[in-house]
Image (cartoon, rainbow, N blue to C red; front, side):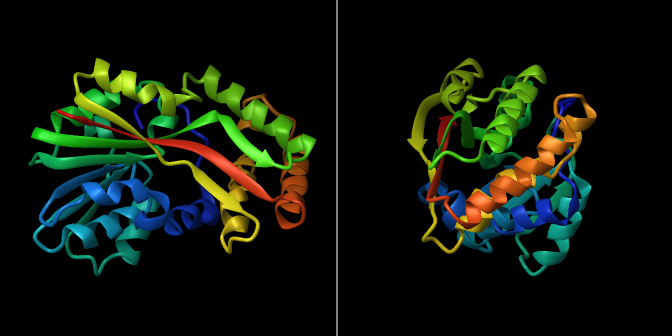
Length: 263
């Protein structure tokens, strides 16, 4: 979002990753918070797949605005979800967003992990909430991912480089466990943390697409271009990991928290 270093989320693969997400599977802890007639802001909405599902729950008397700073995702979502009349998708950065309303609920899924200034983002979101509005932040602790059995050495090397690259850019690899304190520092109250771990097993129909996310991450050459990684290792990590997912991989668990607060 705001002057941060990202993996470049380009190409059809990354758009597919967003389009395959749903509220029921990828933000299931949010459902109890959603009420008919709510106004909701989805920060870093990608193509708006989850935003679209939220819009269905809040109904025609409610509204959802999704914002993302990657134009291609917003343009894709505008086409895919054009029939969802109470959904508005906007290409805009959070720190440059100037809404003409305040919201009952602000959500942000898997977004703050990419920011070097998450506290500033939480403070900005707070400005957009109604006096008793709530925020729900869903994010990972990348330090505690679990694979069974262990993935190939090439992917392990890639993953450790990925974590170091993120740290050097100021991103918090364990942000899921830091969110409560960050919300407190931003002045939110009634803070609660809900475990939302993602666990995928080989027997599940979506194991290939979900566990395979790390091949999608490795598809970016950004860390190669910035001198963190040899391209041959990157390509080997993709090849070896794809084989692991398709053959011997049994499960992957990504540690995820939904942390909420009230303005």
